[in-house]
Amino acid sequence: MDLILRNANVWKYKGLTDIGIENGKFKKIKKEISEKGEEEIDLKGKLVTPPLVEIHVHMDAVLTVGEPRFNMTGTLLEGIEIWSERKKKLTREDVKERVIEAVKWQLANGVTRIRTHVDVCDPSFTALKAILEVKKEFDGLVEIQTVAFPQEGIYSYPDGDELVRKAMEEGADVVGGIPHYEWTREDGVRDVIFAVELGKELNKLIDLHIDETDDEHSRFVEVLAAETIKNKYFGKVTASHTTAMHSYNNAYAFKLLGWIKRARLNMVTNPLDNSILQGRFDTYPKRRGHTRVKEMDSMGINVCIADDSIMDPWYPLGVGDPLQAAFVFVHYGQMSGYNEMMSLFDMITENPAKTFGCGDKYGIKEGNPADLVVYNAPTEIDALRTVAPRLYVVKDGKIVVESKPTERTIYIDGKKESVEFIK
Image (cartoon, rainbow, N blue to C red; front, side):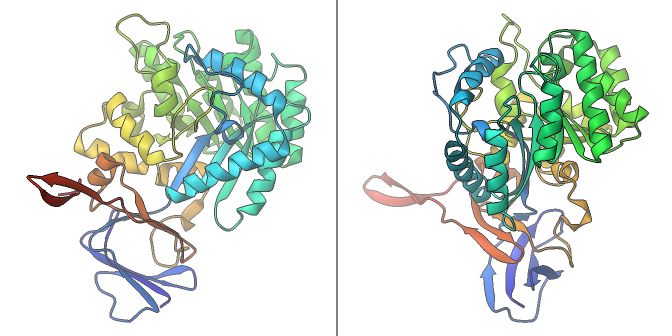
């Protein structure tokens, strides 16, 4: 075999396991592989999972924090205003340089699939064209999906509907929308209907920014669920953010969750951005800014966790790591129960892989493409607790990322000791 990883703690497998890889695929996964590999690595009980999937990020805006100015209020609306100024200065070179850097960051964190929303309220499609070039350059290493995202609205921006359609013709993969940002409720409903009809017409996936507000009267997810059911477009539609759901009365929320499940919507929460963008108009108590993840998860609704931003006008921090977003959600989503913390790994791997459309070729099982991530931690909880560095990332059987953990030394009474955060 080409590569054997020995003594791995493979996610959802019992006991230490050997992983044998040949011709870019998982050849054998068992307790002990007797054969010898051309290359062997003893993982000594380190955690192994499938690759992480970044299901919601804005790559066109990455690494623009402070340009042309910082977001002083920290609000979503000021972020949009700043971006509308910054994007006037976009060039192909500018976008490609920043996006390539961010893709490398994500790959180093074990991400091999990225869905990026790209602002198409720009008749020249500067950012979209640049990212499509990056997509080709990373082909075979990182798979990139682009969402034709009308940041300033489909009907609140001149010819927004035509721009979305033209963006799909340019090569965008997913139809986007932003109904809560439209000027009126009526235009918001039109936004949803347009996106679903266009997605079905083109046989493309759909992913809408929707109800990303504290306003309990913002109720466009119900429209999205209804249109999905009417068009029988089950499993191909994603609702991102849906933060208004934290403000709905429980009776309405219970009804809505039932429609979401029936429509088989994929749901995305963005802990990093929304924990600071939402609740800005609250005094006390302050809302947490997240959709109803626990309830959805318990109902079998496909819920995903994503980064959303990497150093842009909306979120000044970030390193492109879904595990970091999951760590934050332990706190803001009150997901600190053992089973809840374990489920967070589903939300950054298998669940977004389903949303991405990976099919049954995703995951660590014999015959599948040999894609995996090795963490500098023995268990899921330790990986989450320490936001553990990724020691190896394997893509199609080849090691594409290798990192060495930081060595920390302390001095006590003149004696030198190393420190690890793993027991």
